[in-house]
Amino acid sequence: MKYTKYPELKAELKALAKEIRALKYKRDHWYDFTHEHPNMHPAFVQGGFQFSVFKKAYEFRHKHIAYCMLRGRKYEEIERYCREAPDFDKIKSIRADHYVPEVVYSCAQGSL
Image (cartoon, rainbow, N blue to C red; front, top):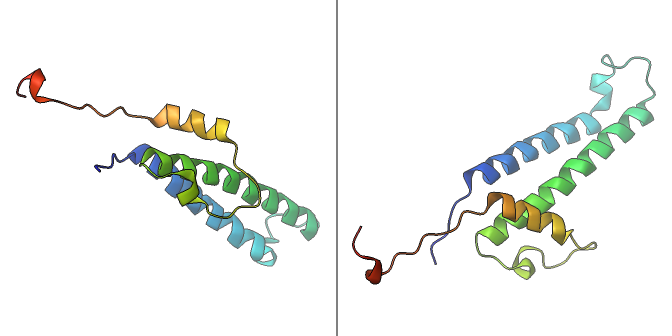
């Protein structure tokens, strides 16, 4: 089976992963960044970082599932165990945005 690559979606996944890593680092090392928000309570800052990580991770999960499905994997192969089922409507819309139909040529169409 020939796989079609989706460079735009792959670039989005890489960018999201980079953002998530940066946010997690900031969340885990908040005491290094207290000079940015000197008047804020650390728990408040932690909550903001955690919410940002959650939002980005949610988006990454759905884009990753859509990317794998576009490349020919079944959902059961992508996530074998999960606590919460993904939003399949969101996955369907991502797949529709990035889908590139394969052009199949046959001998009946003539030579290229």
